[in-house]
Length: 328
Image (cartoon, rainbow, N blue to C red; front, side, top):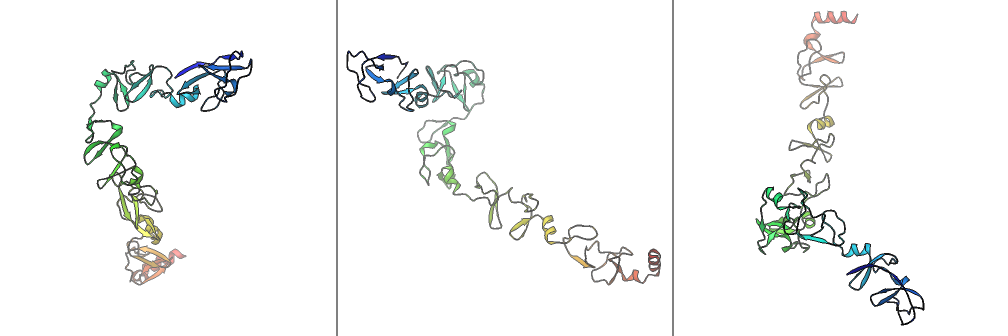
């Protein structure tokens, strides 16, 4: 690989020259570029990737092809793991990552590192001193190849550690990664694992039976926190629910939907109800208008101000006089 800024030449005619790209002969006194032993028309000296002219720019030559600086960096230059920029010039390699020399520093104390004194800890690059202060991590050796397993490659299968790439998905045969899932001792990639699972009727997302709670009700599968009252949207969380027209309701909303409100206490009537004078009464509120006695639904009553009046109050002369006085 070489890089340089090109300089213009002129054909003196002393020797025959042909353009490296178009293979046409250069005319007398025609400006051209000389690269090693190859000559180029100015119009033909282009980046092999983007075809932009390289006149007045810095070029890179690699494996017989010429590139502009941008495309060469994009195709061949390593990317610094810390600043995420191309590394041009001196590069430091450590733990399968590349760094600018200035970026190769401890993530904790920021001192300069060297390739022999760098340690990886949960995705961080640490110096020896900082690594010693960190809690000790459990080290796994692969049960198949006996090599150390990094966290990003670790797959626990039948209680044994493995490199995930030793296995393939049972369904699609794709090489697995650390996020592989196990179903009845068979390994699946996340996508194929989802096809093994039920779908929540409410959110339409996969229910992971290994990490999520779910239930089956009304012939449908639900995340437990998504099975809720159709009206007030409160989750049932294992409490009783009531069904009507394919919807689930809590007790209060179900009674409001199908039940009656007591004319006296204005509460939903959950048990027996007395219908009288176009009104509904719960049993504890079905009382005589005169003496406030609790009435039985079979008792004979008369109407007074659209309220029941018991037989005893009807024949009570004192009550009749007070009623007559009140009406005057």
